[in-house]
Image (cartoon, rainbow, N blue to C red; front, side):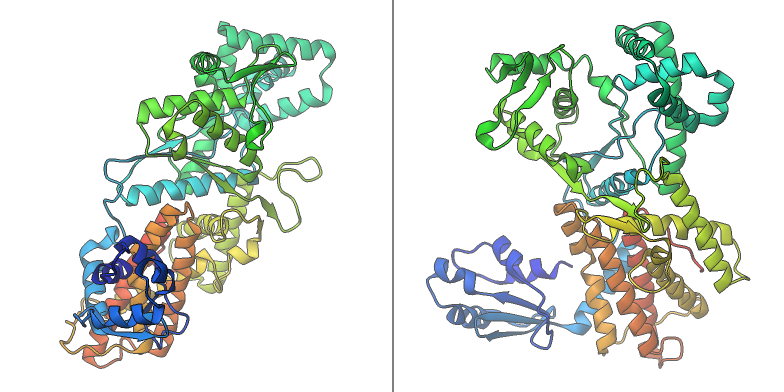
Length: 560
């Protein structure tokens, strides 16, 4: 149940909507006064009354009803205490009934959300910098799907540019098919690095010609390019499978090569395209931005040209409710320019385009994309986490079965959780030891809590108890119940703010509340009435934590 929404619908304040009331309701830091509080100060102007009077009058109009146990007015605040037993019964019943779908809704029914994320470059391996866009976009995909939206995951491939002419040139000079097939993406990348280090002026000219051949449809050049592309996708799809990431479209930059001209013509027709030193631009000076470059002086297109064409295509194809771009904050200006150009073109859907910016990832030693000329590959980070997870699990529980499978879930989970736990805009310093800690605010801690809850339930076997009519709820139990009841709201909040960290932090909070309850309250040896309630509470925690972690792309082992 969304208790903020429930309370808001019980309040009748003249001139103030239920939505405004719901948004103003907060959880007070000291819950002795109440579980929820409504500050009435912001309504004083609309209602033309002092906040204290407003709070007193509203309190008088709300009677306890089995959900709300008590309403009090204190110094302009309206405080609500929820019926503990009622909340426990209704929450546990809802979780039992909805199971894997607890926290889900149909609020997005009939609406499409496009999410552009990961956006790998053809012929280049994944490095650690690709982690955030990939797992952040994937989590948003899962969250929006959970809320009933039709979600389209788009991998906007970097498959256009002169670098592919360089690659073909390097392959022609130094490569052979057997070596490339055996070495895959890394062998291709080695060719590219060698070209940049050793290419002569003649080779640079040759590379430009190969790119021209790709664009003009030359059979051999395109066959080599498509071969490089297939090797790249085979490589990245292995990583995607391990991370639980999926896409519905792999339309990259090249796909929009024949879709840019109509956009350019519309810019010209509406008088937005201007010439500047031979190039074609949209002047954005009056909006506090540098010009948006559409065509270079040689007539070549740019990222902006292709992104505008992609926006048109996505709106025409999917008629999106929102189109999200999960791209690092270094591209803030680029997307501001794109969205402003669409607005100037008169596209009312420009307001539905969202740049979901995120911070950078580095390792503790400062390495990020390069270190002494070497790239920090994402698959190496993943493999190291899985291996370290295996070592930790083996040390803690040598007799545990299926340790390799469990280590895979724990290692992968630690990578994902480490990237998603903090607010997305913050830079991340990735620590192997920290993300794999069984204590603290980590994915492993949450997974271990699930294993602990599962162990309790397995020891209880088929033993189940009905809840007593006059249920007594202890403080530690109530903290768990309240947190369980808040999960649907956390999911909606994460979607509205494009912030999966809300769910990651929720998972840690629930795990901490459960572990306090686990240590403070007897479960299996409690008297029958308390035992039944506590077993159901444990089962509800396992279900809700599993749901929360699954929205982040993290699996839950039964044992650890």
